[in-house]
Amino acid sequence: MKRRTILLIILNFILIGGVIGYYFTIYIPELRTKKRIKPLLDAGLSLDEALDFDRNYRIYAPYNDTMIKLATYWVKSPQFVDKVVEKCKTWEDRFYVINEVVPFIDNPLTKEQAHKLIDEWYPSLFHECKKKNVNVIFGDVDGEGINNYEEIFKYKTDPLTADTDNDENTDYEEIFGWVKQLGDEINPGYIDPLIWSPIFEIKTSPDPYIDFEVYYFGRVFVAKARTQLWNFRWPIEDPGDECMYVHYLVGYIENGEWNFAEGFEDFVKTDVIKESGKYLEWSSYVKESTFNFNSYAYIKLFVVDNHPIFYVNITLTPEEDINNVVNLYVELGRKSNGYKWVAIKTRYGVLQKNMTYSGVEEYVGHYFVDKKIEKYDWIMGRAINDKASFALVFKSAKTIYPNNSIEYQDAISAIALDTSGHYDTIELHHILRKWWNSETLRSGLSYNMEYYIFISDEVGYDWIESLVDIVKSF
Image (tube, rainbow, N blue to C red; front, side, top):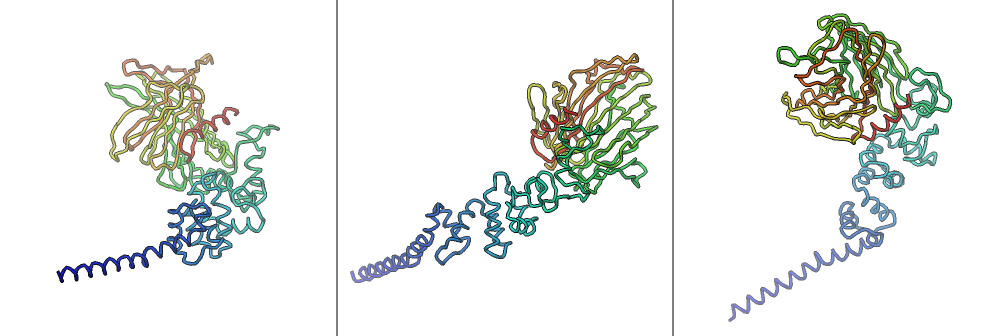
C-alpha cells in the first residue's frame, strides 16, 4: 500500500511537470508566436504562410509595416524575395526592386526571367530606372521607343543604350524602320519586319574544305562547304550543336538496295552575292559527274522578328536520265543528338510525334509518310537539348520542261527520320515513290523547289505561323 502511494505521488509529479513544461515550452511560445504574427494574418497571410515566413526570417520583435509588406511579397515569390534581400544591401533598395518586379512575375515575367533581371541587370538598370522614374519592366529607360522587357527578352538589345550596335540608327529604327526588304527598294507605308541584329558578315575560312563562314553576333553561324552541304549552328553559343543541310538528294534503287546521290564530288562553284548587312545572298553550283546532274541553289539569309530565316531556291537538272528514283528531297539533319520531338502542319491541323533517344545508332522509323503538306505548311523538330527549334516551310515545287512550260505540285510529302538520336532529319520530298513504283528523272527537265528554313529557341508552333504570315508578304 505504501509503495503504491509513493508511485502515485511520483506519477502526479511527472504529470504536473509535463503540464508545466508544455505550458512554458510550447503553449506560451505558441501564444507569443500567434500574437506576434497576428499582423501577418491581418494582412491576408494564412497561418502556414505566416509561420513559414516567421521561421525563414527569424522575426522575434513585433512586426512593423516594412516586414508585413515584405511578407506579402515573400508569399508571392519566396525564392526571388530571398535573393533580393541577399543581394541588395539596403531596405530601400530591396523594396524598390521587389516592388518593380514581383507584381509582374507570371505576367509577363517568368520566374526565370525575374531571376535573370536581378542577376544581370542589378544595379545598373534598376538604379537608372529609379533615377529617371520609369518602371523597370514596362518603362523605356533609354527613350528610343521599346520597353525594357522587350529589349531584354524579345529583341536582345541593350535597354540602357538607344543604339545597341552603335551604327547611328536607334534600336527602334532598326526594328521598326523602313529599310531595304530582301533587296527591294523602300516601300512607303510598309513597316519592315527585319529587326535589329549585329549585321551578318561573310568571311573566308582557313579550312580548305570550307568556301566561307557566316558570322552572326560575332560568331560562326553558317559554314558553307565546297559541296551542296552547309552546316549551321543554333544557338550559336554552343559550338557542338549543329544542323547539316544539303540542297537536293536523289534517292534511287540499285541491286535491290536504297542509295543516294548528294553532289559531293567534282566541280563546285560558290558565288557570294551580298557578303554583309541585314541579309546575305549566295549561290552554289555543283556538277555531279557520277550521276551526271547539275544542282544549283540560291540562298538568302535574313532575320525576321529575331528569328534567322533562310530562303532557298534549288534546281536539279539531269544531263541524262536517272532511273529507279524513289526520292528527290531536301533534309535538315541534327548532328548533335537528334530531335526531341517533331511535328507537321497540314490543312487538317498539327500532328506531333515524340522521337526516341538511346545514344545508339539505329533506324527506328519514318514518320508522317502518308501526310501531304501544301504551300506554307511545314515540318519542324525540337532539338533534344531543348534549346532550339527548326522548321522547313514549303513554298513551291515544280517541273520545268524544255519548252519552258511548268508543271506545279500543289502538295508534297514531309517526313521525319528517327535514328534514335544519331542523325535525325526532317525532310521535304519533291518525289516520294514506293520501291516497286520508281520514277525516272528525265534529261532536259529541271526539278525546282522553293522553301524556307525557320530557326528559333521557342517551344511549340505559334512562332512558325507568325513568321509564315510575314514571309507570305514577300
